[in-house]
Length: 222
View 1 (cartoon, rainbow, N blue to C red):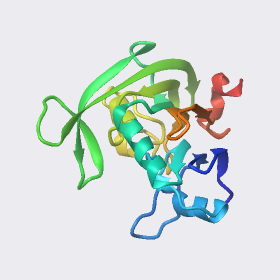
View 2 (cartoon, rainbow, N blue to C red):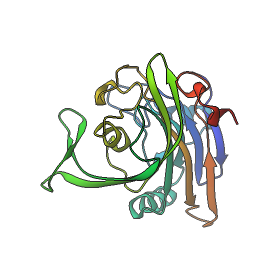
View 3 (cartoon, helix red, strand yellow):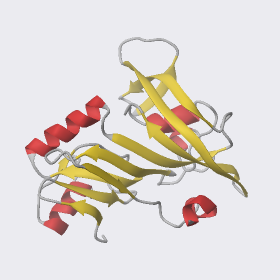
View 4 (cartoon, rainbow, N blue to C red):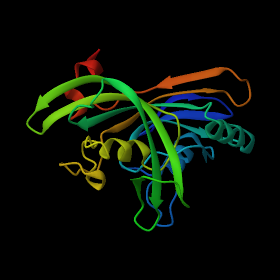
C-alpha cells in the first residue's frame, strides 16, 4: 500500500487523504484500515473522529490524543465541523442549487438507509445543500458534478438523498446506480474546523483522482 498523503500534522491531529477501498477504522476481520496505515507510516496512534464509507475517498482528520478526539467529536456533533463533498450523479438536479431535507431510517441489518415519510423510532432528520457545477454527456448517460455541504451526518446521507430524487451517485449500485463499481463517485473535498487546542481555523482540501468519472469535468482541471 502506498503512503497516505498528509495534508497537515501536529502533535494533536493529522489531516490526510483517505484512498477509496480502505476502511476508516479497524474492523473485526482485520481488513486494511486507515488507523493502522497511519500508525505504520507516522509511528503514532490515531483516533477516529469521523468516517468515510469504504468506497469513498478524500480529506479526513484523525486525533492523536484523547483530548483532541473529544473536542473534535464534540465539534462534529455541534455541527461546527464543516464537511464539503464533491459527487458525480446520474442526470441533472431539478434546480441548480438547493437544500434537501428528508427523514432517514437506517436499517442496520441491511446497512442501508431509506427516505421515509414520517418520524418514528430510528428515524432522523437529514439536511444538505448542493450546487450543480457541471454536466456532461457520456456513453454512460448524462453525468453531473455537484458540490455538497452537509448539515447533518447521517449514514449514507448524500448517497440516499440524491438517489431518492432519481439522481444516484455514479458507481453506487447499493443506491440505484446503473453502474456498480467498488468505488462510489463521492469525495470528501474540504474540511473546516477549529483546532481543538489552539482554536486556529484549519482549512484543508483535496481533489479526487484524475480518472473516470472525475476526469471528464473541466471544473476539476483548473
